[in-house]
Image 1 (cartoon, rainbow, N blue to C red):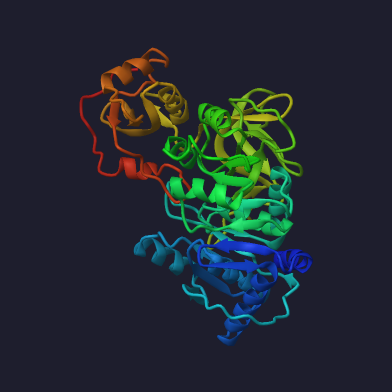
Image 2: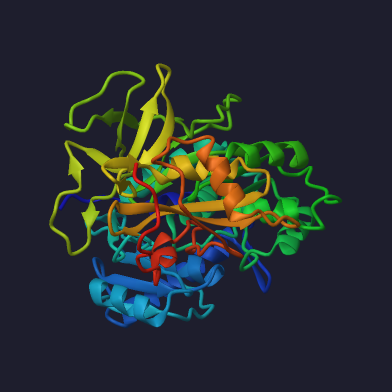
Length: 475
């Protein structure tokens, strides 16, 4: 296996430039860049004393706190592989991942102990395992090299135009790629300050932005909606914010527009996944936004679409989105099957690419509903429901049907103060969608089940559904 430069060496170089500058601001402590790396070195020494060495896998179950950052940097300084896991995992979920990883150590506590350590400058072992949320099946560990982390975080920093003057508010779960790269590592790479309040609460976020003069906020669509709906938002001074960034789940254009109107700055939208670190995005340095698109391939990344037969489709045609990026995973842990085809990763998303490179996601192959021989893509139905004035959120799934194979079912969250009827919503969709597409089953629910990154966990919606015989029409 080829050795590459340890990503943590780049962070050490930044720390050498700003040793006395605050790096992490937590409710119970502030760590300068110098102290952060001294504690990480002390942690590396502690691991080594426990016979943990280069190439070993170290699982970390830690909250959004300085202890998480110290542990991760300490693992890298040692030349070991970091496997961060969410503390919110259920015991059976955590146990399944640990059985898959078979780590040399599981870290749940970190003591503030400073020290010195000679960092492993070159690493052959992976830097990081990123486990998916498991919304479509058993979680799998995506394996990333130090070279992938290096490319990804330079790209994130350039995309957001991060400088050492920035103050980044990090409320996203750090074990997931959006939080880890976008709201932590890219900021530390550039010498910015990272505020770690420990979690997300709208009133706390608004207060922190004002008190810390935050310049950069990263969140998922649900967070932006909750902030806009918070009583404190209307009177808040958000003038320090120069940019917000969305990720994980799609950010609808109406939400991005309302945020810009009320907060006074732009939400930078984009596209990524556990296996690929933000390969498509709008850029802070470019003012253009297109409502229907998620951005363009960032510098160094290539995109294309493939038709059903696996050959490239023409410009403007719809096909499976394929991405080639230096930040792609090497493969899945304990799974020998190749995941890249000549360097290309097949995303499972359907997309169109405009002549000037903007990417529009039009559906998802893996979520395709086959209703009476017709293909229905949930994203299209969800977009129509989201346009209804009484609908805050919608999720669409295929449910069993004895004659059609699958039927279209929609779960809807109403906006506060409204109570849309299911018949009204069905008629609204029927007026705007082909006869075989609109949902015959509709349920208004208090909230949609979501994973740690804000994505809707559709498996939860399907759980316990059961076939409802005799319902639905012929296509």
